[in-house]
Image (tube, rainbow, N blue to C red):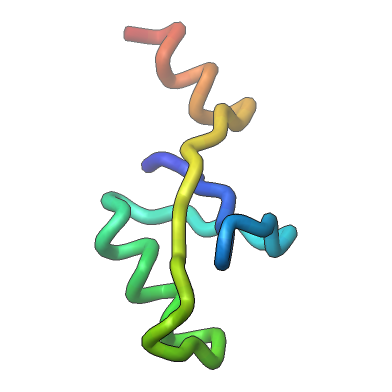
Length: 58
């Protein structure tokens, strides 16, 4: 599963979330943070050591 870096209003939060999709990642973030309708939530996929190892095994 991919790992995403969480950005809110174009600022890195320092949080990361691992989810099957960006939609699932959004649900995880929205359920753990107080967001307003004005907040912009973005995700950047990051390479993790485990993710890189799985790619090499293919």
